[in-house]
Length: 447
Image (cartoon, rainbow, N blue to C red; front, side, top):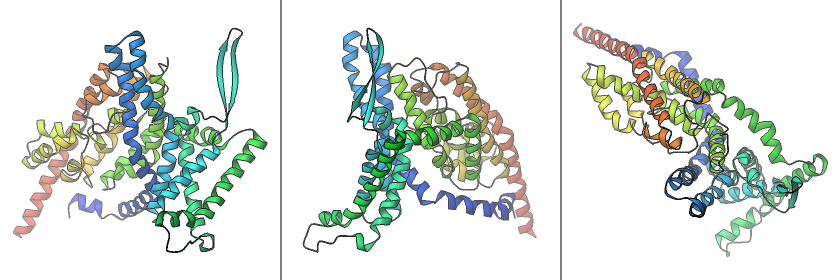
C-alpha cells in the first residue's frame, strides 16, 4: 500500500472528511454559495464601471466632459454596489427554496425582498451645509444607499435565510393554502396558494419593525450590521482569522474536498462586502480606502493560479523536474492554471492525499497572504479597489484590481518566485517517494 493510500484510508482522515462533507452540503451554506454565484457578475461589472470612471476616463477626459462621462460608472454603481443588500436577499430566498425543493421558489424570492424592505428604516438623515455650519435633515419615506448597499448585505443575507425558512414552513400547512380550482391560470393559482403564508410572514416582520422603532428607536438592519456583520467581518477578515480559515480550507482540498466548502461559506460574503466598500470609497474619491483583505486580495496574493498557489508548483516542475510524467501533467495544467483553474494539477500530479505536497499546498497561501497583507498595510502597494473576475491571469489581476499600481504586479511576481522555491524541495521529495513506491511494486510483481 502506498503512502497516499495509507493516508487516504486512515480513520481520522475518513471521519474528518465525512464531517466536512456534511458541513459543506448543509443546505443553508450551499444556498449562500449559490446565491453569491448568481449575483457575482453584477459586482464584477460594478468593478469595471469603477475602473473606467476613475482610471480610463480620467486619462481621456477632463473638466465638465469628464463629469458627464462619469455618469456611466455612477449609474452602474447605483445598480450594483448601492443595491447589494436588495440583490442578495431575493437570490438567497430563491436558492434556498430551490435547494429545499419548495415548489414556488420565485415566491420565496419575492417574500425575502418584501421582508427586507419592511425592515428598512423609513426615515433617512441627510447632511446639509449651510452658512452656519453643517446641519442634519430628516427625510421621511426614502431609502438610503447605506442601508440598501454593501453595509446592508449581511442584513439581506439573514433576512433572506430567515424569511424563506418561515415562509416555506407556513406554506407547508394545508389549511393555510387557498385553492381556486383547476380552471384558472397556474400562475394565479400558485399566488393564491401562498397568500395566507405571505400575509402572516410579512405581518411578523412588520411587528418586529414596529417594536424596534417604537420602543428602541432603531431598526433590524442597523442592529444586524452593528452586532453581527461588523464583529464577524472584523474577525474573519483580520489577517489571523483569514489565515486560519484558508489554512483549514486548503487542507480540506488535499483530502479531495473543494476549499470553497469552508472559504466559500465563511469568507466569500465578507470579503465581498469589503471589496464593495473599497469600490464605493474609490468611486467617491475617498481619501482612505477602508479594507486590505478583499475578494481581489484573495485572488492577488492567496490563491495565485488557484488554491495553494499552484502556479508556482507548475513553474517548478517545468524548470526543475526530470520526471517525464510530472512534466506532462504540468504542461497540461499550465493553460488552465493561468486562469486560476488548478484541478488538473491537484488531482493529476496529484496533491490530494500526497503528504509531501500537502505541506506546501496548505502553508504557502498563508505565507503569501501575510506578505501581501504586510506590503499593503505598509503602503508599498495600493489596496484593491476593483473586483476583477477570479479567472483573470496572474500579473494582470493585480494591475487591474489596484487601478493600475505596477508595484502590485512586482509583488505578485516575487511571491510566485518565492512559491517556486518553497514548492521545489517538496516536489523533489514527492517524486522520490513515487519512484520508491513504484520500485517496490515492481519488486512485489516479480515475486
